[in-house]
Length: 254
Image: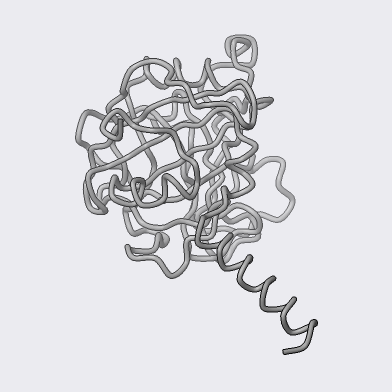
């Protein structure tokens, strides 16, 4: 066997071993805050939200606060389009209008709400005050699909379907989840938020919802300088991926 061939085989074996051992996806490796939402299974609506933080990229995750009951999509969870590739795995795929909240790892965008800027000064996140003309576009044919826009400021009004956000009481406070965000894939789901729930056990159209007090507590804690992420998975998938992604240990894992 030639020296070049031996070297190639060694490199291949090292690559395979590295892959088998699992590498922390880059977004998770950088994050110093993580919001974890888990459900019992793919089709379950009730879930639990937990917060974790660490001092540095290599630090241990520390629990923050208590468990928070949440409700996900009325049909449960489905693999979304996020920061970590999840193709080829078992479980449904998130689609527009399917009533499933996205599973995976997602960056967090701007907060929003009914309050004017001066009443949201306690937020460290960017903030969008909702007026009567602010909408989230869910028309898959629109150039603005999966974006929050002000219809008065958009020069090319090209959508036939959107959420008039100011008219939805659950959006009194909320947070944009960057699912299917850059660039959006038509039909993979849009307008995914963390927002106020209608009540325990009442599923959403695809968002994750909770009590208003718990949501504002979460919004107050989030710091964009700490690169916060949302990890949202059924419990079995969380357990399967925890070591490879170096996710925080849940109470039941200890």
